[in-house]
Image (cartoon, rainbow, N blue to C red; front, side, top):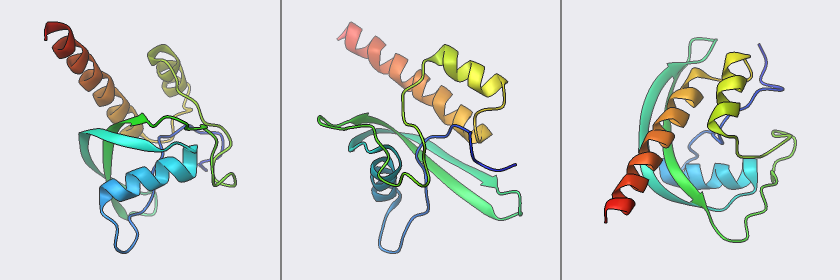
Length: 124
């Protein structure tokens, strides 16, 4: 199955001289037009592409910096950028519109971390 029409978080390959954090901020800019600050490391997951090649994915909870336009810089790769609610994400996943299971796992972890941060702020 191709990637066209499927939703995914910004992602890409670590380039020579980059670390995974640099890649995350670059890909957020290229694929979503968003300059971000990485807040919390969500984890790393090992997966396999359909051709059998292994891939290690890293993800961070990030926040957009002021002035972000939410428009892909690389429009040939991405047709639309937006935030989705938890309910909408569940619907997209249930209907096969989320590109990878890793996306679901990282999304769920981001929700868990954000809820913990809010509880901590409320108790402070």
